[in-house]
Length: 375
Image (cartoon, helix red, strand yellow):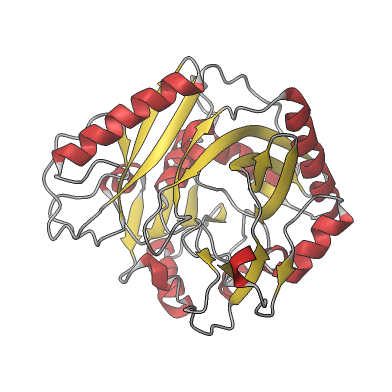
C-alpha cells in the first residue's frame, strides 16, 4: 500500500483543516499557534509557533518551521487557513517554495484592499457599507477596521481614543445579523456549500470577536436567492479557487456584503460531509483548485460550533476527561491567556434551535468544569 500524500497546512489554528485532510486520505503536516491535542492526533507532524496569534505570522519563523517539518518530502501542496489575510508577502514567499492549493497572494491582496473591495462590490451591484481611508468627522456613524483583519476581533467602534495606525480604515455602521456563505470555486464558477448564522463573543475591547456559527441559516427563500445572486456576481469578477467564505449582514429584506475571506474559514466543522468515507471539504477544496467542482451533498439536520474563550489567565490547563463533542483541546499544563481560545464545542440537532440549545448546555458545562463565568 502506498503512503498517504503529505500536505503542508498553516493557519492560526490548523486543526479543522488537518482533520478534514486526514479524512480525505492525506498525511497533514501542520504549523500553527496552538498544536493542541486534536491537531497532534490527526497530523503526521505538528509544529507550534511561539508567540501570541495576535502577532501573526512572521515570514522567517513560518518558513523555517515549514521547511523543518516538510524536509525533502514531495508535498501534494500547501494549504493555508486564517492568518494570511494581511500578509500577502508571506504568501508570495510560500509560492516560491511550494504549490499553493488555494488563492494566490495577488487575489488575497486585492480582496483585502478596502477600496478595491468596495469597488468590486459596486461593480457587482452588491450593497456594501461606505468605506473611507480618512478619519470621518462624525465618528459615531463609523466602525474602525484593520486591513486584512479576520475573526472580528480587529473591529472597533470609531472614537477619539483610537491610536493612529496606517492599517486602520473606516466602514459606516449598518444593521443586521451576521450570515456567512461557505463556497467552493474553480476560478470561473462556484457553488454554495451552505449558509450559516454567526454571532460574536464580545469583550469590552473586542465587541465583534467571532464566537461561533450554526447551519443552516434562518433565511427566507427570497433573501437566500438574493445572497446567492450576490455571490455569483462576485465569482464572475473575482477568480477565486477552493474554499472561501462571503460574509453578510442581513436585516429584513435588506443585506450588506461585508467581506470575502479567500481561504477555508471557521465553519469547516459544521459543513463537513457526514457519513461519507473519503469525502471531505478538504478533498473538495483540492479538487476545486484543480478545476473540478464536485456535486453537492445532502446535509440533514443542523450543526453548531462555538469557541470557548478563557475569561482569565489559565496558568496551567487542567487535565480533563474531554467529551467527544469538544475540539481544539488544550494539552494539560499548557498556558492559556485571558481572551484566548480554550476549546471548541460542537452540537447537532434536528433544527438550528435544537442544535443551539445543546450547544449552550455543552458550553456551560465546559465553563463550569474549569471555573469560568457563565457566558
